[in-house]
Amino acid sequence: MKRTVFLAFVAIIVLAAIPAAAQQGDFKGCQDHQLFPTRMPDYRIETCKIEDFGFYEFSLGKPPKTRVEGKYTFITYAFTGAKGTEPSPLEVVRNYENAVKKVGGTIVYSDPKWFVTAKIVKDGKEAWVEAMKGNGKIWLRIVEKGGMTQHIEASAEIFQNDIRATGHAAVYGITFDTDSAAIKPESAQAIGEITKLLKNDPGLKIYVVGHTDNSGSPEHNLKLSQDRAQSVMQALVQSGIGAARMKSYGCGPYAPVASNDNEAGKAKNRRVELVKQ
Image 1 (tube, rainbow, N blue to C red):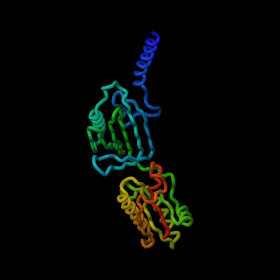
Image 2 (cartoon, helix red, strand yellow):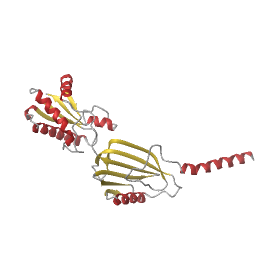
Image 3 (cartoon, rainbow, N blue to C red):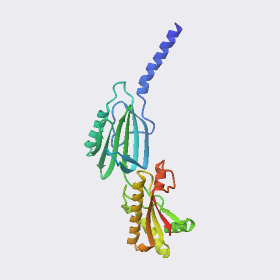
Image 4 (tube, rainbow, N blue to C red):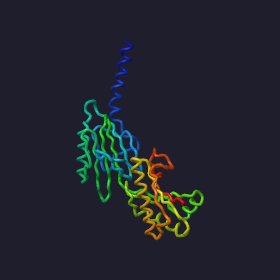
């Protein structure tokens, strides 16, 4: 008799816990992204990650993927509804497609069995979205495209001291369009400081060396780093530096200064270096 009462008591506790678990709230500090202020029914935010400057490589259905840099948001939704009531991948994909279209966005690629990639341009700002359906989960990734805030300023004096001490100087103030050798306008200050360095020391000859992180194939990055180094050299020529004083080279991902396992390390590896000839 006692055993029967005990088992009944345990059953009551277990049954009472089921609704409580289903009603469990979002993970502390997490909330829906402003582009998608509502969500699929019976889902809670299990976890989230926000980086002021990060990146994600969005699938276009076939290689290569498109790398987008900017404010990165990653939200994981977990299904809390009754067994057998979880929405299908098609239902989730179509819901996100319709939400994107409603705000004037574009569906870049859609796999109704798995995920959708979309682009939204709103108020002059571009955002890329990937919504992916898994077993009991929805993964939402959003990158609000934008440039990184440059905290470390380039300086001719710093470059000169580094070259004297080590024979080379890393330049982090030169940025490029994603997967491109086109120099961004915000790089003007760094280009100006390199120009100042070379004008102050007319006898100095340098190698302009491009470096990348390990995203993508080594062959592609080797060419990209060479093209970027050449772009910097051409910018210096336009600033009045003789082309005979410079040579451009690309090292691709082959000379990292930090781990490529995280975005902070990758940012350090994406650089231009001035190497004394």
